Length: 192
Image 1 (cartoon, rainbow, N blue to C red):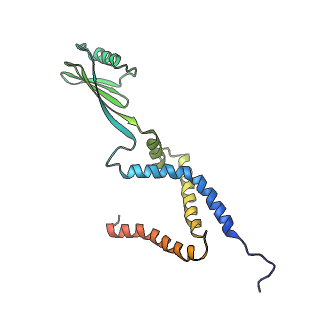
Image 2 (spheres, rainbow, N blue to C red):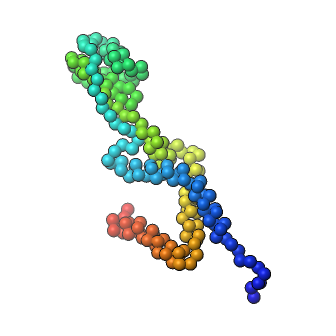
Image 3 (cartoon, rainbow, N blue to C red):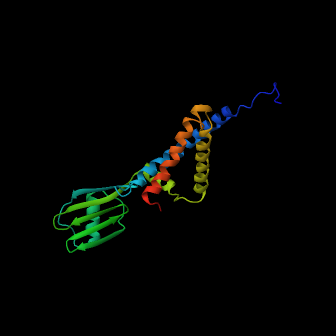
């Protein structure tokens, strides 16, 4: 027979508090993984790590016949202080000057310079680096901890509300729909 003086255990407020606090902890990592996921899902349409660009410049001619001297003159005219990683003739009248992240194609007859290169998309590049676990080592533990947080948030969220709004009512229907989306996609697409 139940003890009339014993108060029922109130576990839902504790669950909500823990769910809330872990949810706050997960916000930063959720933004990292969500941004990276959106970027990488569309990798066929754009480069999420770099912004590719081209620019046209003009330098005075004539340029020296010596490739290294011509490259130095072009660098001085364009105020480029970085040393090139490579200088070579693409053909008899075009000099290519390679730098980290960009290349200059110099028409030796006209002095026209076509620059093509890449600028890092800082936030997305860092997010992708973390999401794809390129850092390895300690990040593996952080990512695993985040995955455990997400599992807890998903599971605890199902039990926060009792009754018709909870798992035995509307919540249960929504959970079933959430499971149905990946199951239907895999089934209809033919799966792996």
